[in-house]
Length: 324
Ligand code: PCA
Image 1 (tube, rainbow, N blue to C red):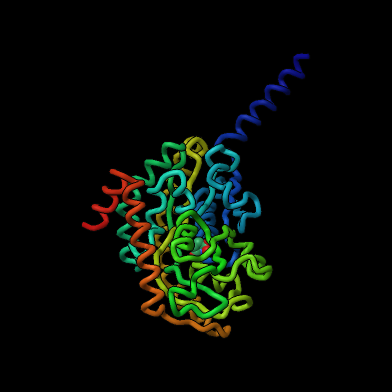
Image 2: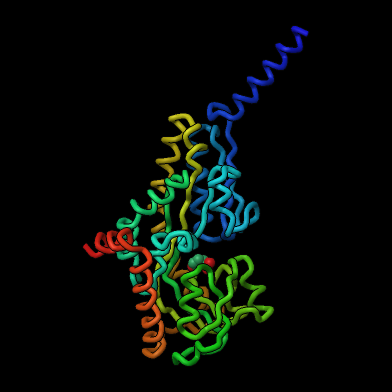
């Protein structure tokens, strides 16, 4: 009897140790985008840095392309502690709170300098809002500027009417509607299938996602609109973070800073490299006609006005910090 309880005690101790950071921690990390995508590559380097800095005590395993948790569920999975850490597309959360969507307002920030300014201006609010959900922001990395992919040529505003348009959040849905297109939500891994089955015939996304999806298999035109520069964000469950040793926390902080800097640089390099791949594979790459640009800008202006109304004082303070 005595022997047994001693054994039970030892087992209980082991189990307790297993949940503490001093033992080896394996963290499963869901991400939405494919292995070859530059965000995923950047996150793998982030995990490698942490593994090296902690001598393998904190081992982050990446599960890309929604393979462990589907994109729409990633934020809540981290929030609930089903996984300790995850990546998602920040402006997906604009339904919860418009401040999360500020980087996806058409034509507000369309080059990297402005996108960086907008991130600096919005980061404190976004961090505070996510902190309310016990989510700690580690880093955020932009996609290249968003452009229009279409099966048919789009040279006039009228060419967008009735077009079945892939959307990736509430804002792209709204933009599609405002230009007369018909939106459908499709996650990145499902893009080729959605085009192949005729569910969609156009989309607004980056040269990266176009090239990663082999867009030339299903569309011929890329119009380099440079309409906005949206971001992915990596967050950690605050409770899981708090349990870590000081050493592991420091390793995460350092790796996160490096990942943000590296990711922004990778994104800039990605833009021209992936446009070249689109061209090399026979796609027609063009700049928007005045008519198409005017239609998109008109829609963008409506969306900006709506956003300002919906986001209230929080939005106002982000915009005034951005415009400084
Ligand atoms: N690619 C992702 C988000 C923005 C982008 O460039 C997507 O198309 O869903």
